[in-house]
Image 1 (cartoon, rainbow, N blue to C red):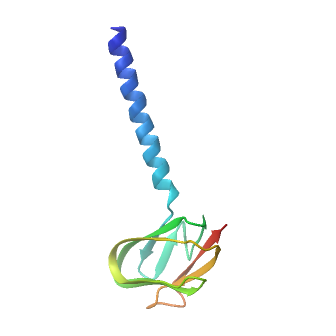
Image 2 (cartoon, one colour):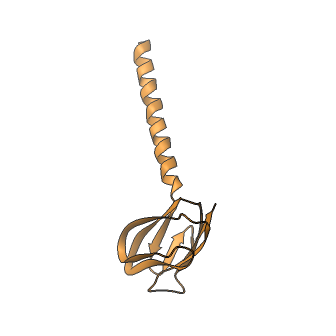
Image 3 (cartoon, rainbow, N blue to C red):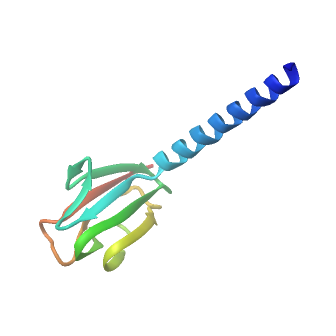
Length: 116
């Protein structure tokens, strides 16, 4: 009986450890929702702060087409216009990046602050 109880306890502890690890991994990469005419992460026109080498994920949930382009920052990139999907981009240089939707700028914008 003690062996069975120890086995059940070990399985429960392992399951909790896996759950906690999965939750922590999901929290490491900030996700920005791309909706019709807005970037949203808690608020419209968010500022996301990350460390050098970290990434941001954009997840589309829009009926209209939207993209992501760097308006100002040391590294320029554009995520092509789309209506669905998910794109993750790493930021390797510390700086403030001003991002816009190329179709809906200047109103549809956000900021990524990369700290060293």
